[in-house]
Length: 312
Ligand code: FAQ
Image (cartoon, rainbow, N blue to C red; front, side, top):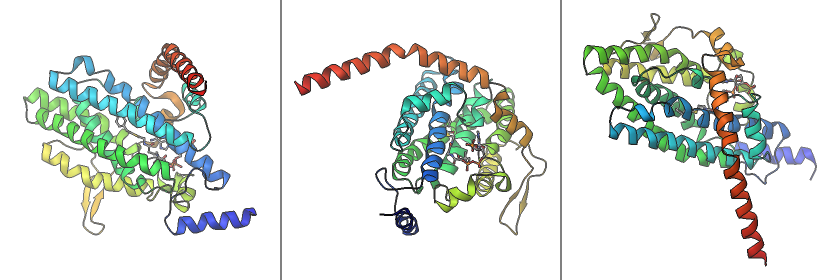
């Protein structure tokens, strides 16, 4: 079949809202685009383990420790599903991890901020997982089959994560004045970076046009950011906390909140590798990767022996 016909079939599949599967023909740029987004998403999940992993040994009770441990393990699982989905596009996991470890690949800006107090575990669950789900719900209908299917399970787990974070905030906000102040301080520090997770404004988002055309993203960065604000502001009110944005105001006409502009200079700086924790995160990732080399070698050697035994 010539390329024009293959492209016609690909477009027709998208029009019918059918998934593109690994063995289907796809344009090179679609393959590149999906590989970029899915692998960056996978990197975000495993780098995202670091700010919370930092608090497992300091959780204030056994119950909190068990819940946090389970949550951080879930993030590792999400990374695994997503690397598997990315690999079906033809790039090996080794290559993808190499891009992360050498600083060539991006991961979500949010994980370059420090977790300073226990209430940051609440704010990360409530706001960071909350923003992540807002984006991921639409990704359950993304056009690439393995990515869409991975997102279904990830969304179920993320919604539990969001609720556990909100519950930590509820307990602190209803606690002593010092605890409430700690919760407010976390909201102050995590609010704006959470809004930045959705990516640059639509008019500065070079990938959105193709992403929407190919049904990889179903909604734009600004649409999702607006929905997140609409959903989260009433939750902050329920907690008795104040969203740190003087421009925040209900707009009856658009049935949503008007809100201030995130500091995009800060965002660009963090994405370029100069955020508060970028170097620390990459160093931790590289240490884990080299420390795990013997495990990978042992697993590969065992698999080789087993394959030989099966073949014999
Ligand atoms: N951070 O043209 P756009 C989680 C880059 S999972 C860093 O708008 P696009 C779970 C972007 O890559 C969180 N870089 O790009 C969890 C592009 O650069 P490139 C991760 C960013 O792809 C919770 C350039 O800027 N979620 O949190 C960011 O259309 C708690 C121009 O941007 C996903 O990855 C950013 N925030 O839209 C784990 C979801 N934003 O690649 C542990 C899947 C943009 O051309 C604890 N990804 N950039 O060099 C997406 O939906 C999209 O990729 C966006 C960006 C929306 C992130």
